Length: 213
Image 1 (cartoon, rainbow, N blue to C red):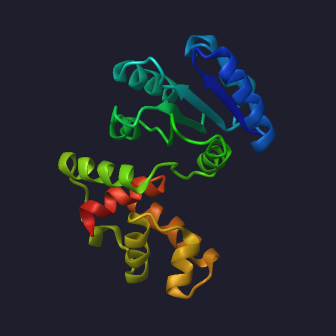
Image 2: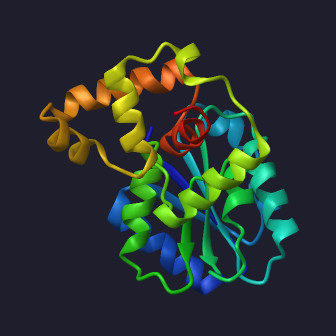
């Protein structure tokens, strides 16, 4: 089955138009709802289908947004993604949202063509966040949590080298070019690194690296 996007927010016309646009650009099925209570019984209906909840930040308090993210993450489905749109750059909600599992951020001033790119990246398991946001998350995480040291994870010298590059936002293609290896080899290394240090994505790997490299 294909991907499914739920656009959650009060802007009915805006969200309906966004749903049509994302369906055309990403091939995902898009549905809209004013709030999460309007999303019913998706567990049995969609099974293993990847689902992205796009939560509208406009007019919502930080506490309400964080509660909505947590509610999405509590749904008993294996592949749930959450991202925020209409994010105000002055609110500074990214760190707490990432800690709860948010995978991306679309800002009020973002051009429309960023949405399909970001949505596709999130469905591919990537984080749609700027290096600045990642850096702030790393610093906050470093102050709050201590993780096992790097040598305990059994990383090879090559894996440490690649992890350090991942931590500063380098993509697989850039790492491959710098190390003169194939992108496929880099992908394999990254998979092995994630498995050894027990993280699901690049941002969590960067947080781990900040404490252990």
